[in-house]
Picture (cartoon, rainbow, N blue to C red):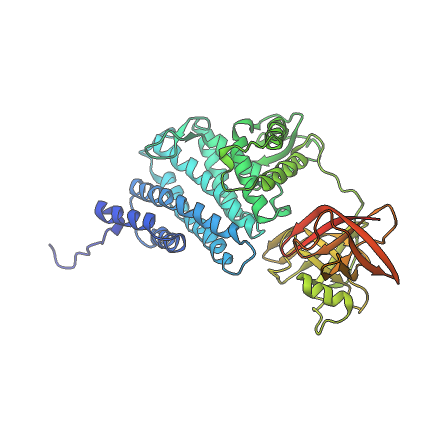
Length: 485
């Protein structure tokens, strides 16, 4: 060897023995530790030179090894989505896909410079398909945190779709599981990504997000992108801009040839069939790990979002200004309504608009307890006046902070003591009681029992109520409908 010669050290995973040992460790370790290990290996490719073909092979091997651990991490997160420990699983899922995306960026760079691979080469098509699948996988994990896919992810997925289109490989079946017959196409995977973006995941709690992700997978065969707009094409994506899809509000003139239309309404008949199956007590194995209630809710949600008539707001919005305080936690809300609270939350939110049944707020800061769909909050304009009871219906988090849409439950909630003859407890009456009509009571889960009369004093008179059923529930609370006897 000549003096001064520099010997470059090959990446350790290029050795078959080291790769096999690493994959075995990933499969045997617990979900958090295994995914951290995968993330470290994926990030290592940024700092070491690896030939394109070897890089593609290693990224695929690590991605496949991580999939069972990702599913387990998702189960751990959903088992207690609002607990402090669950944040770890949610963060690690997002970190994994961020690292996988950076690794696929390196693969894309290799594809662009490796002229030995023909445009329709199987390895090239597999890499393009996996890039799109990675973006669709990431969609769920960022939605758990009420974020959206970054522009970089959309550019990566869109570039892969365009490259496959140019090579005539959009509909070429590609094997995606080694040793199994699982096959897919780049067109199908990209349509799934578009469908998830058009599913309004920012309006769903975590278990409904998981159910919607499984639902879109189930519906993949009935979803498509078309060149020409048609009835039911409610969304479009511009492949020239490589940006996220948007709802079509009217025909654009002239329409650029780079537009593709998502025919969401094609899936509505399958949604109706699934709804009938659920009503009969049948749940397809594709929804394993998700409750029937979450699947039913996801079906209703997609039917509204993807139906032939776009969802319309019931009442007109009006721009408003002002600072507003928000508080959550049923016990804290009760103390605020009664005036017995020892502390009051700061007016850290800004009103942006309001309608007859709700309002929208924003803040440069993110409050993890408040910023979750389904959370019940007390809202106050910060001037010491009355508190309003509301439920969070939409959350969007980004670099500028948080934006939320809230639906008003009660403009004049009353804290009352309820008694069923054997025990008493505090609850919040949401409506003015009128004989023969229904009222709503916000309380802890399981407190009100169907069929057992409940009594409370309102303005000096005794009120008799019969619980009729749960109207709504969320983290730490239920809203129960009652008949006034």
